Image 1: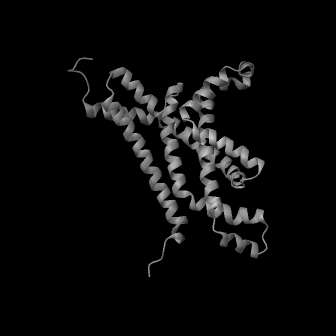
Image 2: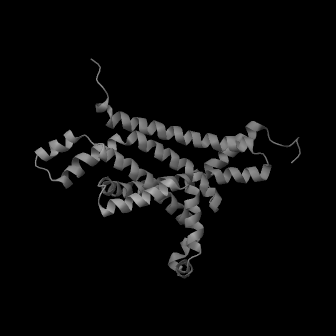
Image 3: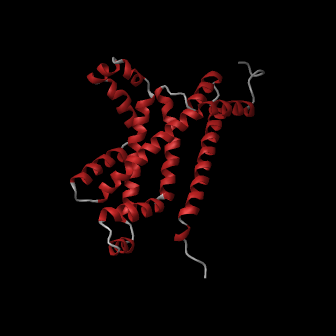
Length: 240
């Protein structure tokens, strides 16, 4: 491409943004599925984790130590490449019903789920441990069992209090989907890289990709601000 026909910075940026929107559904599907399944898994794991001296708590702690103590990219390589080296994987994908496992999507998604579950477990477990004893004692005074107190008082209150911290996990997970492009998945970053490889111009291309991720981040921040306003207003000090 000659200098006379090369697109300007703004033209290439707008073109890349348009292309990134084509990869947006894949990025959102990875983020939404991993966050949803991670949330469903992390709540019961957090309850186990909060009971520090039990065997189950020790197993959960070992799991969270590994996935919060190692880089997500390393975990993705372990799952994506490591599983492919096992004998059972070759036997499994030979079955027609499991041919979908040849695709990178389920393995990338699995890595995201395991990672976000570990971080969410630590987050929710901390919220449970920091629960006000007064609320627990009030529930017990009404004749509730500990399992009922956990379901009706501790978990709802803890999850509400964890909203500000959990919003950071959602943002980090959305941004982490950019790693999926390293495993043949063409999401937002994958689309940007296609244009970079075509034009050999990195700066406007990655500025455009950054703007798309920034837009997603601002949308998440706004959504969680609305949730916090609805569910955490009662925790704010009242003006006299």
